[in-house]
Image 1 (spheres, rainbow, N blue to C red):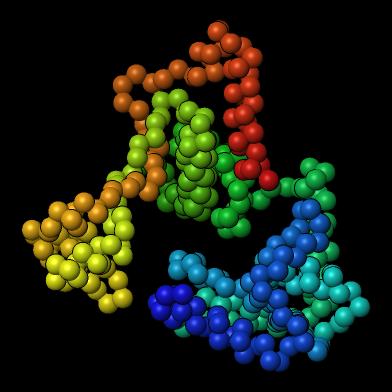
Image 2: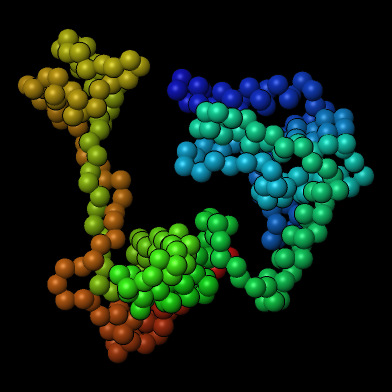
Amino acid sequence: MLHEDYLFLKPYLNHCMALMPRCNRYEIELRQEFSQLLFGTPDFVAIGPDWLEIVDLKTGAGIMVEPEENDQLLCYAFMVLNQRKSWQPKVVRLTIVQPTDEDRPVKTWNTSVKHVMAWGARAQAAMQAAIEGSVQLEPGDHCRFCKAKPVCPKLAGHVVEALPVVVRELRPDRLGYWLEKADLMQQWLDSLREVAHDLACSGHPIPGWELKPKRAVRSWADEEKVAEIARSKRLKIFQPRKLMSPAMAEKAHPNLPEELTSQIVAVSSGANLVKSKGKPQALPVAMESEANPEQAKLKSVMGNLALLKYRR
């Protein structure tokens, strides 16, 4: 582990290590499962004589997460307690460790077994309603991490409803109405782009769009060999604990020896999906259907299968 990684994770490591001597058992990233629809892997579970604590590490900087009524942590606690039905701890502690929250990197909320099991009953009822198709879809902040956004009729409905709206003609009260929906519509648009990119990368062309490699990032092919060459040439291309990047080395030494320049490689980190220039391409399935209908049908089916992960 790099030193900077350790410093970042220190609040999480310190909290978990402080729990270990006080508990009867602890579990690190052990998968919990209630059913095929309800499962997950808590980062850390501490089981004491009369208490249970669920600890979850959050590394994101943009979204501050609170433990109070946190569905993810309640889900973990419910599954742990469900496996130990005869055990009734006096307190259930739900803890979020978020090092990017400088004011409160460790946040804990105390609740009860009764409250956790009531959450579990509501979750089971909601899952059954979803299976039966009797649930009402309600877009909101909870849609942020949902993989079904690209195929969600509610989110798509917001976008379709907004298409004929002329923003310049909106009154302030109506503009406020659309601003409330703007974040949800943006999430849908972002998911749409993600699905299209995933399909294109997996071999399912998007008509009128193409994959373009991202700008290549230069790096050293063999850092140990580069360090050895630099030492033999008495070139200072070292920073604290690591080598300079090729660009920094070239700036520090304009006449970099060929032995080192030959060690520079440029690798693209992926591809962007961009609009094709020129005449839009026809649908691949339509072109192939005339020559080979069965192959076209198979390709269409494979494309639909690739979308299935967004319907879960």
